[in-house]
Length: 434
Ligand code: AMP
Image (tube, rainbow, N blue to C red; front, side, top):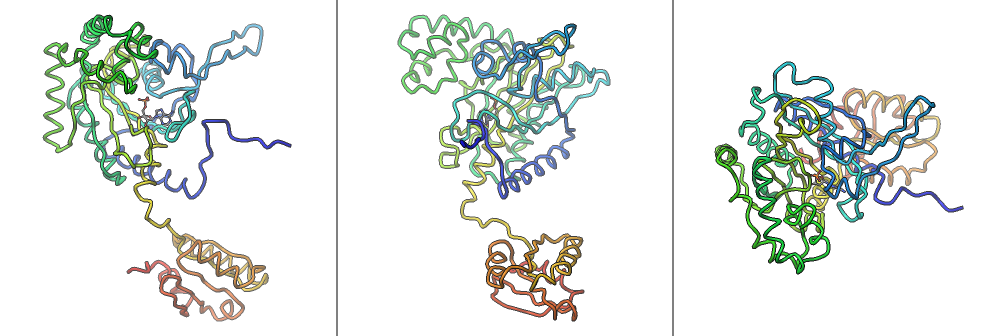
């Protein structure tokens, strides 16, 4: 019979990789807590209209990549509805903000999420159809200070801190401002005009984008079109005084905090809701991501709440590609040994199994990481398993059970010692390099 495999573009996350996933998530949670963020969990599927309105009909995500289906009503009276697996989480967070009247307290809302997102993209290394994002949003009524440049800088400084605490090496922050909705509109018109005489020279995708959504042309990676793109008008020349001043304040606060950035006038990002500050963090070639070197992206979305029928609620947010973060950490730490357990307990004969399990219970209660073998294993097999999994092996035979003196084999030192049971936990906590 043919075996059933995980669907193309999805994958299982297995130990020991999941240890790294948990490590990344716990550092993210601890950084978010220090900056005053609380967790939000929104549904994995939403009404299709949320993304059509919130992300934009013309974006690749909405036009090509969503998992959408007609959900049948269960009763005659129950209408069917078009539903979609979330391709990103910002629209869901803003929907929840509106639905639960989170603006009513008048305070800034700082929310983070960790969860899977779904896009029908062409799978490749670092690009999946179910992938995880760690993201955060800062939003609130304008009088809460949600439109202040300080918030943009705080979010960027927090991201720099997070990447440094995760020990991601060589990250770069690319920064731009796409201005207000009006600035963007004027820029779009200018771009469309500038594209008229040259678009026939461009690839098929860009010819289409030049008509439907000219800003998207700037995102293009098509090598043949780069020269044309570099000569197109720049958004910076279309910013009104307000947007320009806002961007200057963001940069000044980043300079004050010592967060390095590169200005990138082409960074407009894939989603329609962005206004003013946009950014992306990338890692250098050779960081395990192949051509997908964008680790995270985000920006300001001052009009999104109104687009979804809500009150004015300027905001800024980002989404980190967690899969890519993990690939980067793995590539950058290739030489490092995976963490080993503190001890492997080897019962000598089946009769010692209950006593060995009880010893493991004691040690685990002391906070040690412990694996128990099986008395049915031959000594050689216990040794091999212990050497693979743990830093030390504790031999548990009849003598040890009665005398309460255990034999401990230290693999890195190659030594065997006798340790009284009462001192065992402390002895096993000593790192071989201590
Ligand atoms: P976006 O929501 O498109 O702004 O993407 C934010 C981040 O999510 C990107 O910088 C990537 O790191 C990650 N990402 C986006 N799409 C995928 C995907 N299909 N597979 C893995 N990571 C992705």
